[in-house]
Length: 576
Ligand code: DMJ
Image (cartoon, rainbow, N blue to C red; front, side, top):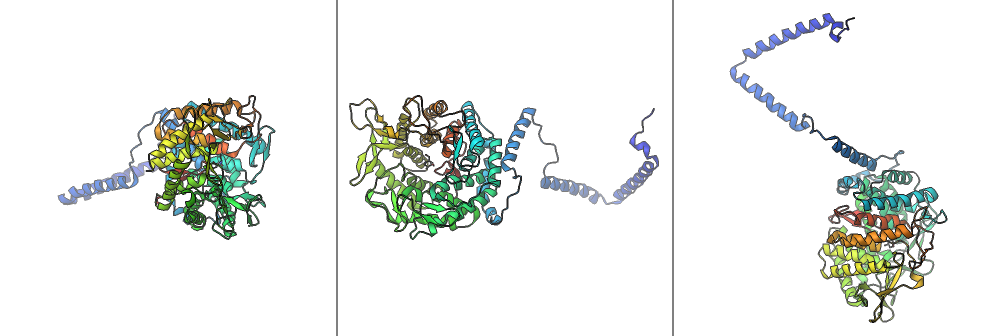
């Protein structure tokens, strides 16, 4: 049997067309011959020029260069990552209240973020893989037993609430993004879109919720371009502003009720902590830059200006640790420290200066002045190994105490960051010395660091530091690892990676439970006992800085484009 060809089916129709085509061709040929020779030369040239124009406007019609199947696989993977990072939530969030034009006006930050997507393709080496696996383990435990609550209680397999805003999800989502963990990013993003609510009748700490939740939401936006994170950020920030507007001075109250619009000082005192009121500005400013609403930036910056105006002259730019929201005045004769209650005041002097394109001179002047006084009054070398550490000045006469919180280790990274941006070379000597003293704090039976150490001032003793029983707990804090991340970034010295790896091994050995990770009671005692809490900063900062520390290429989240807030959330650097 002969199969019909397509043309066989319509013989007459086709033959008619052929005859018609032949007639048209003959007519066109006759017309062409009748044209003068000049026109016959110029017309093809015009036609060729026209073709060039089309190709130039619409791109080459030629097929793109062929990729090997391996290349294609890689490209496909990167595209999947990009797609997931941009994935539109199942329910498109209501963006009423978010001024899209204002957001659009700040596309520079968005472009900056877009450039970074290929960097989040996932771990590049075994150490990064191990850290990402640790994050997955922590997330899985939290998901199973504490999902939507603030923190996991890993030992009792329960949860605890502090702000009641799913703190661990919001605080740690950008770590999952940076690690390229698609499932965790999807789960966390969906929860934030569908469940996160700030309509809670409870007092929250203005500082803690700003650095962890507002900071986290902003970074999620900058890393993904998903504007619904900004809507949540605006909702939260609007509720927090009452901390400022209800106080009689530029200094905000420390606690804010998210629902009722009231604010107050801490229950145990009328004063706010120095670090708490001066560590809000990176986050609120970024929100202003993203939304075009200046209120956030202007309101929070007033506190920085106020502290600058007071001046802390008595201690050469080192400030007392409490400041009153009613009077706007410092409480006199308190401890001068780079640890709890004061630490990030100094950090945000430098980082605000960086965030705003190094344009506000007094920020960096105050920073340099404080660092000189710190060097002069608070730096000592321990005995017998001459470890450089930073002690405290005690009231009433600023007597020196060799006590150093683990929190102080952050200053190593901050000093290093300053030196990269033109600060005195001496700051790098202090930064390196302090990074080493922080490593000494990890030389315990468990390999974990205590909350506080006392360094030895006197010759003739064997140990450089001692740990008091009440200070021996470990919350798996990030500051030393943060310091080693900065130091490795700036020097390339692998010893910082080795110190970080040892700390990570200790965490795996002594803090990892069947479900998540737990803070421990005493770093000197084996077997360890647990505090039964997995802090959100363990995922937001400790694991993030470990992952970044093990980036051998030292390029993930470049430090000339991003500035980390005090909770480890990277925010874009602006030019003003
Ligand atoms: C975090 O919330 C932040 O790093 C803050 O600046 C200090 N305390 C914890 C981590 O130790």
